Length: 224
Image (cartoon, rainbow, N blue to C red; front, side, top):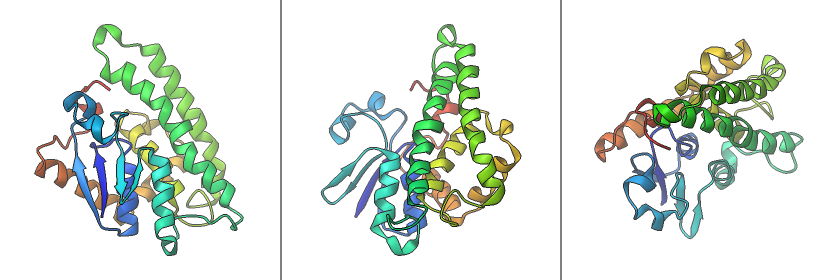
């Protein structure tokens, strides 16, 4: 069975959402954020000290977008992957990694210098610069989202999960109120998906059952 190590609202939400979309059986192991700061033994699970850490038999993976691609390929009949022979394959790969590399990375700086660092080390200018950086890249999706309900191939795919997590993070850090209308409407569509709602519910239930706070770390001021 697949085992996923997860922190509330961390990047590991991507594979959790994917697992719910696909209906694959899995075990969810919750950790306080950041796991490396709370349990040195976690480094034996993932030497990076980060989540996600996903295990599927002998397969071990730690990159959330790559895990999305892997899981989508595990059940191709679900339609969450775009096959190499499909015209939208390039778009699929591009948006799958756009969600992490282009949209999530700048928000980690917003988090660190706006939420996690002690007051004397916070950098409001860095926060605003990288918030604008993220939002400007997000605006490049507007023409596409004004035409289509999802990012590629005329259907919901793992690329939407990747970008969707970046929008969830943006909501947590206060950027969602600055979304353009097409992006805001897209985000609303994603949140209405039953699997998205199930993932949120499973996350909360597992956190409470395993003695972990169900509150997102960015709302608790935890150090990244």
